[in-house]
Every structure is written in structure tokens, then in C-alpha cells.
Image (cartoon, rainbow, N blue to C red):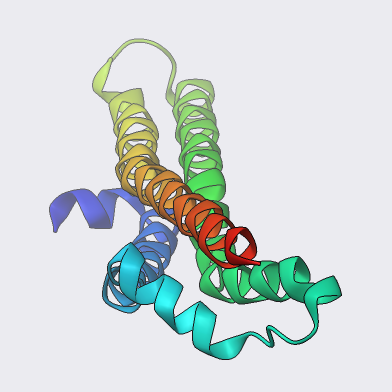
Length: 156
């Protein structure tokens, strides 16, 4: 908790984004079941009588599986930038302390450096699992789409 307080508002924003992101990640883990079940679900929703739009129908159903992944991707992209913002802010505070009190005591600017390091670490801690989860889900959905197209369009 001490690190969170030292990191300030940026760490609180990162924690908030982490909660949102992991909520979506857990939701996706439970709503994208096995490939076979998902393909059967797609098969029941498409209209096989309209062959001209069969591929479009499959892509539409697959795109529905991707809902929420944009948030995960954005969190993975923004978290390191917020960490960098905290780094710049911490270094700025260090230089302000040096400007006001001089270089006589190194502990004067250590507070700003610790803010810089804490926010950088927090940004990376948030970004890395979100990036991994996003890539995992995209890979899984791509595999579902390919298998669905092979099974459904291949039948015609």
C-alpha cells in the first residue's frame, strides 16, 4: 500500500484500468468456450439458404466474439504510457527539489525518483498480462473463424 500511495494518482488510475481489464478477461475466458461448441453456435445462427452472404454471416458472428477485446488492447497500450507519464512527473519533481534545495543532500530528489520507478513498474505490471490476454483471445477467435469457414462453407 505504501508503494501505491507513493505512486500517486497515476497508480490509482492504473489500478482502476487493471480492474476493468481483468473483469473483461475473466468474462472472455468464460464466454469463449471450446472451439467445437462455438462453431456449433455459429452454425445455428447463420442462414444457409443465402449462400451469397454465408461468409459475411460467419464473419459477423466471429466479430461478436471480439466484443470487449478493444478495451483490453487499449489498456495494454495505455498502461505503459501512463507509467511513462509518472516517470516524467517523478523526474520533474526531483529536478524541482534540486532547484529549490541544491545537490547537497541526495535524499532530496530520491522521492521523485521513487515515484518515477513505481509508476513505471505499475504501468508494465498492468500492460503485460493484458497484452498476453489480448493476443491469446485474438488467436483463439481466429482459429474459430477458420474452422467455422472450413466446416460451414466447405459443406456447401
